[in-house]
Image (cartoon, rainbow, N blue to C red):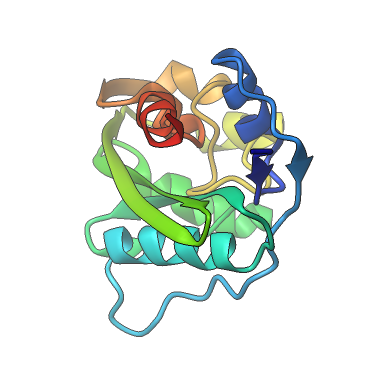
Length: 175
């Protein structure tokens, strides 16, 4: 079967390539990513992964969504500088969770999982980080694989999950 990746993320393609997986097609899913009222981060990540998979036609589809959560609060993607600054200020000197919901649909049967990684930042030099431009379009306003590594004090769990796709768990799902 030919795998379809339901994602526009170049990072997910790179991560899959690391473990020798090259999707036959990449078809970004266009869905409404607005959290439902009272929706918790874990449920949100899983729901979006399933909805992305459902939005793409094909017999073998992989979809994912990564969420940065501070407590029960779902942080937005860095759509503009002000939003990224707000996220970084909230995350500075504290722990947060990065949750990736993953859905694999094969022959009409879907399997949805979520992987959670705990991350702790030290004091974030927000001005310096904003100047890198890495925050653009990133959940929580940062990319751990870049300059954000300088203020990442601790990671408990999957590093690739924080980048955007938990490779160990995805490899198990695809087998």
